[in-house]
Structure formats: C-alpha cells, structure tokens
Image (spheres, rainbow, N blue to C red):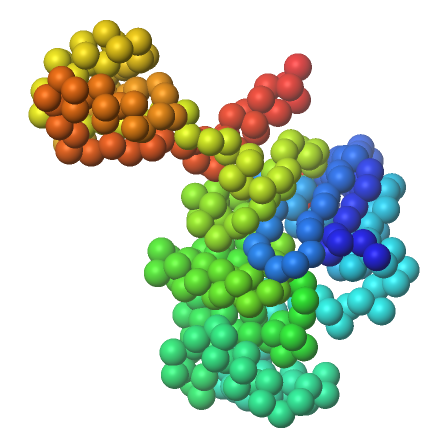
Length: 315
Ligand SMILES: Nc1ncnc2c1ncn2[C@@H]1O[C@H](COP(=O)(O)OP(=O)(O)OP(=O)(O)O)[C@@H](O)[C@H]1O
C-alpha cells in the first residue's frame, strides 16, 4: 500500500499550438504528495504547468506520457474508484446565482446522496459568516470561493486539490481562505494547494513542490527546503562598539541600515549560535534590545530557483 496520496512519474503534457507547433507544458514531472493530512504547496510561476498537472490528475486532460496514481491507484484508469475521496476546486464552480449558498449546497448534497447534516458541517468549516441564506450572487469573491470549498467537503474528501484558491481576493479574503485551508490540513485532510504567491503559502504548508517550466525544481518539507537559521539580526544601543566586540570574538559581522532608517543601523551576525552572541555582547557590557534569527523565506528560495530555471531556459 502506497503512503503517497498523489504520485506522478515522468509526467509530460504537450499541447499543439495554433501554428502547428508544440508547447511542452509539463515535462518529466515526478510529484509525490505524502498521505497523512497537511497542506502541500504546489508552487510555480504563472504558466509553469500547475493547472495542467492538476487537470491531468483529475482526468480533465490526457497526459502525453508518464504515469499518475491517486491513493496508489493508477489514474485515469481507476479514477472512478478513488474520485469519491477527492475534492477539487479547479475552475470557478457553477452555482445557481439566485439560490442561497445553503440551497446550492443542499442540492449538491442531495445529488450525491450525502447524509443529512453534511451541509451544516461544510458551512461550519468554511465559516460563511451567517450569510449562507443570502443569494449566491450577492456574495463577495472570497465567499464564493469558500462556498466552492464547502461544496467539495460534502463528500468528506481525504484529498483536496485547490488551484490558486486565493486568486483575485483582497488581503482579508486571502486570510480567511488560508485559515480554512489550515484548519482542513490540521483536521487530517491532505490538501494540494497550487499557488504562485509564496509568502501566502509558506504560512500554511508543511511540505511543498516547486516547479518551473513544467519541471520539478525542488520538493520536500518546507523546513528542510529552507534550511536552518544561519544568521542573526542584532539591535543594540551602540552598534559600532558591538561590531568591534563581535569581530574581536571571531564572528563575521555586517551592518545593515535599520528600520526606520540608516541612523538606526542593525547588525547581521553570521552564526546560528544565538547564545554566543549574547555571551560576547553581555561580556562587554552591551545589552541586546533585539536578537532575531534570520531564515531564508520561501519567496527568496523560490525566486532563486525559478530565476536559475529561466536563465537555463534562455540558454
Ligand atoms: N489548452 C491549452 N493549449 C495550449 N497550451 C496550453 C493549454 N493549456 C495550458 N497551456 C500552456 O501550458 C503552459 C502551462 O500552463 P498552466 O496553466 O498549466 O500553468 P500554471 O502554472 O497553472 O499557470 P497559472 O499560475 O498562470 O495558472 C502555459 O504555457 C500555457 O500557455
């Protein structure tokens, strides 16, 4: 029994262009999303092949080459056997505009024969904020997106695939969707969350796959991808003396303009050993007002990877 919820091997998709040429949207993609719940980011710049990959997994597009498995079952061949365990929001779902969100869900629930109470349960999870009896057409984009997620929850999926669910939302809408997704991951649902907004995804994902030009660039736990802290930011009243003292102790130090400005410089010390910094400064009678571990964020990591990919592609 495979412990991967999603597994693709050598996946490739070619499209024919109108001029009779060929566009490779996905090439040799090995995607592995572990079972056990949590949010897996599927990250890549616009046009990198995320939607195409998701469409193939859901049987909406046919791969040119390669194999795919959902819950260990080969798809699309065995898709009918696993599709009940999969919820997906890929394109804007079609709801009846003049019916309430609740009625829309009730109709869907009846259509799939879901047990009574599922509609309440799904609405509870996405927090429609008491607007469930209002007409769908009066909903904000964020509410429409939350209703779409609620619709997928009617069958209590083990795997939820969300393609850019925060596209077009304002910061408050993004935060609400993020909290919903985080809650689902914590409740044991495995979520594949595609996005090109990295800062956003970093806050909810435990693991991630990064693609560029249809190719795998990196995959793994977010903590492992980013590595550990290698430097600290230090704020002290006398940065000049602090620099000298730290350098005398053999530490590598750079001075960076602080926030609110260059008149409040901060010191960057290239060590993961926070205790050593406090010991050296304290020994010289210099007291820290701030000590912050610096880690690369996913955005920096992603841009470095995808820039390298772009440079490679231009060659
Ligand atoms: N039906 C199609 N016919 C031709 N080319 C296509 C088709 N669908 C996608 N493509 C191309 O395949 C590439 C990958 O597109 P895809 O939509 O999968 O990327 P994406 O990572 O989801 O991007 P985005 O973040 O913009 O949604 C793009 O170059 C796109 O133009």
